[in-house]
Image (tube, rainbow over all chains, first blue to last red; front, side):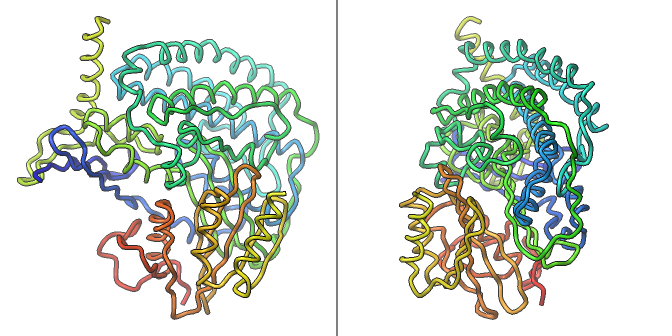
Length: 394
Length: 143
């Protein structure tokens, strides 16, 4: 069968995330996809063996530039599990606040990108604009907009000051009307629904087969969430609910993420209201021989850290499993049979820490001649939205 | 209770192939089993208990390579780790790919990082390391 290959992806690891998708297309239809990883593989697991237990928390924070606290959170949970003891109460609440603030800014980031890929650049600008106040909160708490350095074995590194609580709560409450606007804009817009409903569907069975986690699984009707199922930090001390949707398509993934934003704001506000006074660090001195498994529900799903200690100062083995490791593999299922113009949004729908779509290029399989560059493929997606808009007279 | 039933079922099904059982905490249990028993127990957990395959982690203990297969039963928050010890130099074990797709990438990773071979994994190639990585050079091996 004569077909073309569309390579999507960067070889340039600095600016965006290095993953490489090779789309095999027959006319307009995607017939196969090759996914290649490892362009920026740093073997962090091996480096961990040469760092002490405190340093590892900082190092794993550098794994992800978007949800930077996900890995240290899972790591400190693993150390708690290894020791069999929990940090002081106040530290548990602070960890929860940090985890949820991160979910808010990460989901808003995705929402903006999804809007851009669909040709809604206003959604993109607004989502990122409303993400800024959340980063301001981080700056006030930790001094940094990213890489907060808050998690440490046995507690947290910095306190959140009581005098900041009213401002943090107000900033988050001000976000709610903006979320209402996004929710309305996405749920009620017939064009967005036509572009996303029934597109890139993953069924419940696919979710099990591919071991999907996080919003990707929940949007296929799989009711899992580590925060509720294997409670840690202060998640069992506040009221919230797990958001699911049955569609399994791009639309469902957007709905789940938007609904989760409300839950996260709710969790942070409750944590600030209920936060007990007291120490923030139990002052762990030595890590005994043993093994611990820590999990955290990151914005993209379950992060797993396995730490083995031999009584020394560094982990003897540290295994890290990021949620995208499970979710990205499902692209093989989601994108095959769909059109090229939908591929951009489908590949982005699992929020794979991957936003390299402007580096796509269409190359003729036989001649190797470059036919389009990356911008064109995004344009293709945006043009499709325009066509639907015109058809509907909007 | 579902938790106790799962523990009992794994014990009965593995029989003499069960080497050790550690009940670490309410949500964490570890079984050390012989490698021939792995596909059966994995099948039981995935198909009958509807457990989710979370990941697998390999450790080089110098004399052997230990692989922990992590399953999670989400409705009761139970994290089950099946430990399999592969004595060097015989680092071969059945692939779990016939049971579920999510075993594909992690088996590729264990293969390239620790040199474990998976019987039945047909598409074995490099996942994270480059394609021309030298043969039999495994970054996480300690020998």
